[in-house]
Length: 217
Image (tube, rainbow, N blue to C red; front, side, top):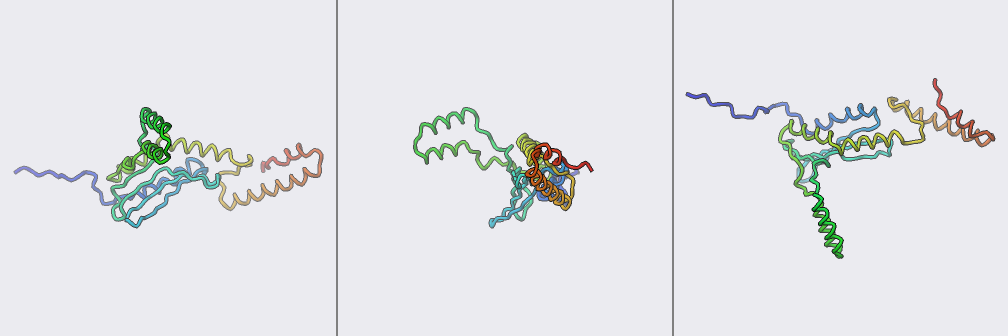
């Protein structure tokens, strides 16, 4: 009698990693890679309809908490898989011919309501989100997002903006929050002293330059 083969999938596992755990695991690496200039945060919301939405944001604390959404993942409350992934790199882009036709029609139409409808044609539909059926598929989708040109450009632009923010008195990146606050107070006090001295001397520009240099100790 012929042996009946095992017809089950080879990727069946009992120790399933949730999408939330996978996204949270990306928070530490971006902090290390940017030496603390940028941070990542995962937020979770649950709708009344029973859907869980996870959002991975890139944050630049120095830039007044600037935040940019990198991706969003949605799954049912009682089923962590499948999970839909939304990200800029997955959005379908209208072709050049489609954009030209829509632009020409929009310019010819005077009615604002019709213009809005035509503009909506150039917007991507909500059925473009790829779906991950398993843990490995979700990991691959998240990796694709974080390696995309859109995300890499956001990281580099944000890092550049943070590096060039402020007056040039940049604090050491690896200081503890307590030490960082102490340094900020000291810098503020030094500026007040310099303003007082410059108001009492005719050679204030040179003196201000000398005294504003941070101590090398």
